[in-house]
Length: 263
Image 1 (spheres, one colour):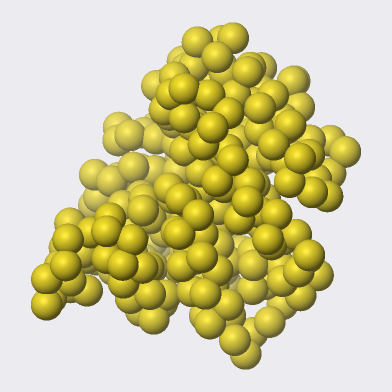
Image 2 (tube, helix red, strand yellow):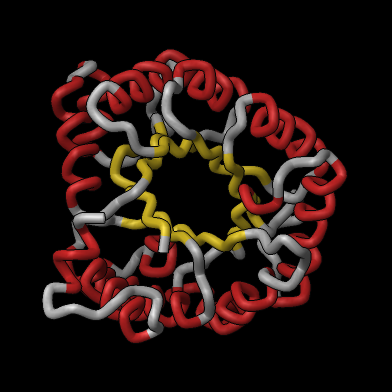
């Protein structure tokens, strides 16, 4: 599974403080720690408190790529912020994210094509989060259809079924696992699948890691390709690595836990 580290995000107090102070060492340390723990890409988000998100996104991209050659996932709600990050990047990039709304697809698929970036597509639109598997599948299919129409390579598209917290969206979770399976058969070549894992445990501080790792192992069995998560949660990463061994996606050896992290 492709692991995207979630921790360089201005919603976290330490990152917000480092961003405000332009403390490059703190950001770079966070990047290194996530990569050492097994992340293969780093999500970058200025957070809601940024007074100048375009400037801050450029600074974050330049700060991270000065110490890491890994993919950078540009996470912002405004296309101008995304494009500023794309222009600053000297490493592979991914855009996080577009919805199924045509006006957003026009802009963000266009940016992804122009800058040779991968793209996350959320199975939702202006009407909100879908209520069942069929609605998710319909929205995902519309994203795939638009990308095919614009000749965006489907192997670079990651579909997100939009994970809800178990605390408020328990009835959705089985449908999300089913959606992960069915997104794979929308087209050939198949789009990939991704979730923002921490959403599932939002608002449940006592057992967040338990909920995250349980859902992630179930999603891995459903064929999930990628997850945005906290790679510093050792129990979470150990569970994922073990699940992939059991699913025959990783070769077993007695040191499989440490071996996977060194890839």
